[in-house]
Structure formats: C-alpha cells, structure tokens
Image (cartoon, rainbow over all chains, first blue to last red; front, side):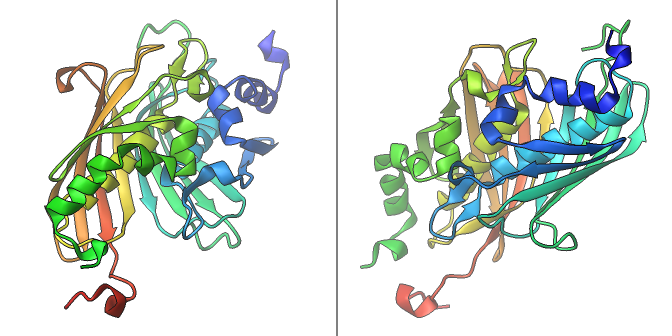
Length: 145
Length: 160
C-alpha cells in the first residue's frame, strides 16, 4: 500500500502524527529527495528572554528531527530511524526569527547511517547550529532494537 | 554588595530558593515542563515529567530525544553556574548525547548534570538521564560551555 506513496508523502504522513513535531510547530518543504525543514518562530521556543534567543534544546530537537527526516527520505526503511548519538555545535545565537534546516546523509549503511545537519536564519552561510549524528535503521525482518 | 558578585555558596543558596523560577523564566523549558529539583556545588538535578505533547515515537509512546537534549543542556548550563566562583553567563558550545536505551512510556525522566572542569573561558560538563539510577541510564551527555566575559565589567565591579 505504502508502495504507491512517494517517499516524501510517506515522510509527511509520518511527521503529521508525531506530537513533538506539532509542539515545535516545524514543517518541511520536500522536493523529491531534497528537503528543507522550517521552524517558524514562536515565543515558546525562546530560551533566554533578555536577549530573545532561541533555546538550544529547541534548536537541537529541530536539527535531530531534520536529520532523521532526511535519512527517512533517502532510505527505504519503513519505520523512522532511531538516534544512536548526536553532537550539536552551537555556532551563533538563534534570534527571534524563523529557523531553517537541511541535512545530508554522509553514509547510508544497512543498519546504521551517519548524518549531518545545519540550521540557519537570515543567511545560509552563517549557520546557527550544526549537528552530526548516527542513526539506527530499522528494516523489516530485523529484530534489532 | 551586588548580588551578581556574591560568593558561589550564596549563589547556590539563591538557586535553591528559586528552583521553580529557574525554569519558569525559560519559555521552552516551560513548554517541556522540566523542573530543577536539587542544586549542589557544580551539580544540578532535575526531572522531566512524561507528557503526550512531547512524544517522538508514536508507536512506543516515548518522549522524543530532543526533550532529553533540552533537559541535559539546561541542567549542564546550570551546573556551570553552580561551579563558577564569579557569576558569568554561559553559552553552550557543543553538546554530545548518546542514547543508551529508550525511556519507558509514561514515566518521569531524572536528569543529573555536573560541571567537572573550568578554565578561564570554557566549562566542561557531563550529564545523565535515567528513571531510577545512573546504573540504568537512558542517555548521557558531554558538553562544553563558553564562559562569557562579564558585561559591563564596571557595573559588576569585578576586578580582572
């Protein structure tokens, strides 16, 4: 059944049902295997009121979801990949503006994948944060957890 | 003297008196609903209650890893505040999180962070997330925090 849906449509269907995605208010713009995620600014995403900066945890959650989504998009797994580990570099202050994200799958193995992701605001070449992570791919027929 | 230049012990006392306020003033922490529960010199504990709007794995009904990132990032930053002799703002440089096992659905997650080394400009932290004890850990984190220069120096009366 899911065979008839494009990978992008499957991803959107999956994300629409994830509560944390709704809580963040993030969405994604998918064109084939290419995707940009968007985190529209909301007051609740703030971590520091005095300097009106986005919370590092919100940025990290957004980047982790971005990496996971891109991996789902370019692989053939039926279930969302599970995070093994992530490292988030906080490069600049996240301002009270929309945040964008893109991820690239560095290596797609049978059981594991390595992914990087970046988040930026007004300028693509001035990233706010960067993520590098490893994910476990859940394939049908494997009992790996 | 100015509260901002009070001794570390005074600041820790202040943190203990305002454990609820420490997360109330952080909108994203209010959204995830975590609370600070204990403050010691260089160490801070907190709890992340289970909540449906934070679920990341719909099938297993488990809180998303990013919520643990928020918890451990925040507690680690607070652990820095609870270990610096002079008050300084800190900013996360990087944070690495390893997920050891999925959290149980419907259960609170306890977070624990310590600042184990401080240099002139960087503070290093470790943190753990678990249900019962560090023997059965859900995730561990390792972070580095930039220690911001006091601003403005003169108003704090801090001799450099």
